[in-house]
Length: 257
Length: 356
Image (cartoon, rainbow over the protein chains, first blue to last red):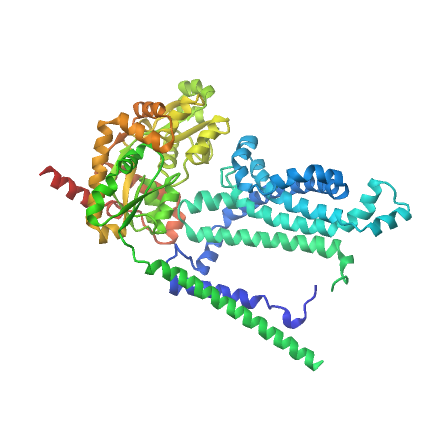
């Protein structure tokens, strides 16, 4: 995506405006670092916390990796089944729709007993958050494969479910799988803080935010970690888009734009 | 071509206008939010008292159940007293920082940690000393008997978060026994309910918690009480009564009455421990027999004199300072002294008039 020159840096204007507004309201309107720490103080906090920050980020990424990795590994085969076969869909859909609305937070007590205080307990909460978006988007992709493509495949010698899934349905559904994964990653990252609230590890962005900074009322540190949570997610999303959407789906270019 | 460019420019104009409008809208709502907080005149018609589900703070619950708060405070124009329950001290102090509590029954350490960060409040009365215990998994009891604190080496111990009394006492006691809390043990910060579940399923090897949880865990067969906190730190202060700075400055008579009612409830619970246990059990949905057992087993003393808590309070202040030294020094915060944490003048005034 190459932007015309004048659009480059367009994002900078609102960003700088928000930062200035934040600093201004903290200094002149709120005047209480507990209620709203200054932007500059928060940036300084990120610097002051650099030692623990890296370890915390890595541990959080580990939890995230466990959760999202497993979610993808479980959701994809199930999505193929649900999207390709009406019978599987009819059999499984009620269970999926029953479990889907249960908030990841509600699983914490069970996670604690099933997985004890390990990284897997946190990974499980993130798994719950990431699993359903990946599943739903992916099976929709497989279900909506146009009949015309399947028939054409048959004519060209693509006979049998395995071949049809591999050469017709999978390529067709990949963009939906990617969208689902992207949404699932987003939800999964939101679950990181909740997943680390219950002493699963001695590091982690959510762990430190809740168990240390919040309990000692260190609000500038809290906001610093909130920003880091946002920044890491931004990087993850950009990386995903770069590698998956720009590389894997180069063929899609030109369909809409 | 020219037309298109102009349209493009117009579009950009509209877009930047939209951004400006959005920014202004946010600014207005943010300042309205904070202005609203400031303008809302605090009426003393409703008082908000924070407390935690521990037998340590039975006085707060007893006075509430018997209706003593409203009864005694009615002549000061207080129509309603809201009791707000918190799982542990740090979130309770966070609510007080946000201005949502006028008084708080809380451990001595959490308000100190909060005062370091700017909480406008002081300890005005004592509530109780000692009364927490280490509970180990049943299979670990014999080892603890034989080796003492060294048996905890390499073990996972659940307790309250840093800045709490329990965390402070446990860290200090481990250090005194030659164990580095960070290196030699795994301290897991939890709420009492989570900690009880964790030791029940063997997720942790031991817990260090205030009454009545140790007795409840033992009664369920999930652990053995091996150490009461009085032997770890004799006469250590535990809970206290905190009043917000606003109450102290603007409603000193209400503060005095709160202390009087607190003394009334404390003396009543000391005289009628059975009834106090029943009130606690009823309010918390606990088993009255276990609570009575807990009151018999514990080494806790209900008190109301804040002077008894000054010495360990100052020690907590320096422990918490050490824990956050880098941060506090960076901000030019110094170790808190007695006058910054305690205000015993109300208690002294109340007891002086009662003695006459």
